[in-house]
Image (tube, rainbow, N blue to C red; front, side, top):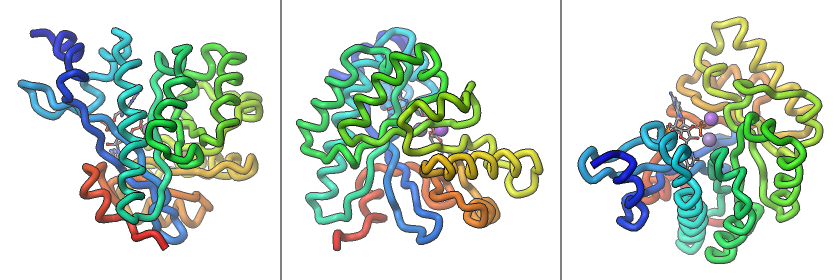
Length: 254
Ligand code: G
Ligand code: G
Ligand code: MN
Ligand code: NA
């Protein structure tokens, strides 16, 4: 049985699940939101991380129905936490290039919001620089449509793609997520320090929220806080967790 064949049947066999990694405000260390991260329980190989099957899903186009499932499951989970009396947090969902190019993306997003009854302002879609650069005028149109619904937009892995400063101005982006490759060697590496500070300064000047990814040490956290980064995500605060464990970290609604 090839990986591709198994992947084709994974949705109907209910083999996908989502883990959630919290993002925290650097000033208060309160959870502001979570990022949904896909897991596949393969019938023979057990739980596989996305790196081991997302590329194949992308190649085969299976990422489109899988991504639709992710959107629905993430919004439904967010509402399940709220119904349990937990304080609402934002829900970030990763989009793949193929999903972003799909003409039904907006329809799928609308359906997930309608089915769950989640407020669009709690949804954040994570896109990458390269997804936007492929067809700039279309990307602006799609992102404007998303933004007009109140949905937030984040650029994932920021700094690793071909970001053009003029595009940063044209795209309705709310959040920049500093790629973890620039965070890893903070606060010792002078180049990474300069890059992190420059991203923070530019993002703040454009009134964006800046999130550092892959924060693993208190020294990284201290550097980022001292330089005005807004939020962090990483193993230091929490690994991605199954929904029941993530709920234990959420506070009751006021
Ligand atoms: O959880 P992990 O570190 O293994 O994730 C690896 C990569 O998989 C990340 O770059 C993340 O953006 C991507 N990924 C995780 N979940 C999803 C998903 O639901 N859809 C898409 N398109 N990518 C995802
Ligand atoms: O590309 P994206 O940002 O969507 O990927 C998120 C991935 O980063 C997740 O798969 C998650 O497991 C991984 N990740 C999250 N926090 C850390 C961290 O502190 N260190 C490392 N090495 N990986 C992390
Ligand atoms: Mn992401
Ligand atoms: Na990332």
